[in-house]
Image (tube, rainbow over all chains, first blue to last red):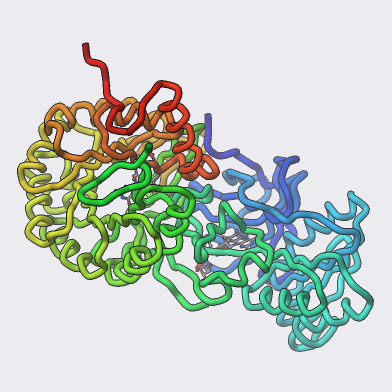
Length: 255
Length: 301
Ligand SMILES: Cc1cc2nc3c(=O)[nH]c(=O)nc-3n(C[C@H](O)[C@H](O)[C@H](O)COP(=O)(O)OP(=O)(O)OC[C@H]3O[C@@H](n4cnc5c(N)ncnc54)[C@H](O)[C@@H]3O)c2cc1C
Ligand SMILES: Cc1cc2nc3c(=O)[nH]c(=O)nc-3n(C[C@H](O)[C@H](O)[C@H](O)COP(=O)(O)O)c2cc1C
């Protein structure tokens, strides 16, 4: 039995100057939005976690940041990548009217969530933020409010501006957030002031991906096995959420 | 019914979180205790921080894990703080694991680790001796004894030496360690192995080789523990580790000669592993008429 599934890249779409979405020739019908896969490039000798941005077919939305993500973004149609997963606790789709708030490539798993919401007849409104127009992602399959810090597109300001705009149109049963941790914390706090719960998607340096090595710990939680989705209430007393990250050796680094 | 004693410590049950599995922070050790472990072992720490190997560092294949994490850890300086907090808050004995790359390093680590006041130290001697061509310390009597003597000279805390199963004479090695001053033997660490992806035409693990744990390790661990018990006699505690996933596995390990039972892989594979395994042990013992763990022994007639 092989540990990884070999997948061929069927399509590559540039979302913006930094982010590409790869469409693979495999499906994961049981996968939930918010779950992730470990992606191995044998020729590059590395493996890293990526959230699913669609399940049938599987899509990964990758921001070219460091060596690994750049090689992943540099692959051509027809080339193969090695996948294991899906892993972790994904978003729980609940309520009849939901608000999705994403920053940077964090908006990608929320698009998968919007797709699932649509299938179930749940009304979703999305807020997609970035520093500037050229870093925005494509809209979700629901109404999408864009925000940019520099005002080059959509509402001028951060995603909280977009979220306030959305809230001025009424209440939501639940808020879903994905993006930088401080951003998600701010989103969850604003949601709380409006009496709404937030599900958010966390990241930590991951090694095994399956709850064994403990490297992706965040306080007493393991991002790979207990998360990556957490309700904000579960993290409010967490000693490391919003504060500390651990590097490849496990040394604590301030966020 | 399940309580046992280990090197002067009372454990509410014989199940011990094995080193390197969900144990690399104080919070995780405290959590394992809350989830029912009788004692907890921290991730092995070295003198300097180590990044370990690159991914893939783990392959899972059914109930078997093959890992080559490469002993990543933040180094003893940061680890002392973690152990200190764990000792204060876990409510169960904390075993601090150390890993050196020479006997001297083991000695220095044991000395530093005393500051954190763990209940016990475990010396992971199943790592390569870089001064001796990369063979594991626990693969020769001479090297295992050198590590034991270095740790013994450095600390008065009770300590266990953790052995590799990848030897023909584990009993002899354990006996030599006990004679050199080890208070306890932990057996076993993982067994060397390799997995290949035929499409990639590559070893899956970045390090090519890794350590096999889980289900497939159980018969190897049972034989090792049995051989060690025969060699060291009755008085020396053994932490029997390898492939324990349910109450019967734990009972078998104790029947082979273990005093306590290390649980690693199963903690990742089974939700609430400690409570479940302890519950299953109790159920077996009740049904079979055992009143205490010390009554579990092999009928060798
Ligand atoms: C659950 C989860 C889901 C993720 N989903 C996506 C996604 O959908 N799209 C995407 O572009 N990226 C995602 N990431 C991040 C991705 O795994 C890589 O970290 C990122 O691509 C940077 O890797 P690099 O080698 O290119 O850069 P590096 O130069 O190695 O690192 C750049 C930054 O990423 C962090 N990082 C490096 N390795 C890891 C790792 N193994 N795990 C977590 N963080 C790491 C570093 O600390 C650094 O801050 C996700 C991470 C996690 C944990
Ligand atoms: C991911 C992982 C990391 C490990 N790291 C260490 C370590 O740092 N030090 C150590 O002594 N043993 C380490 N081990 C070995 C375990 O402590 C244990 O001896 C072995 O896994 C066999 O037990 P099991 O079958 O219950 O997992 C590790 C095992 C795994 C799976």
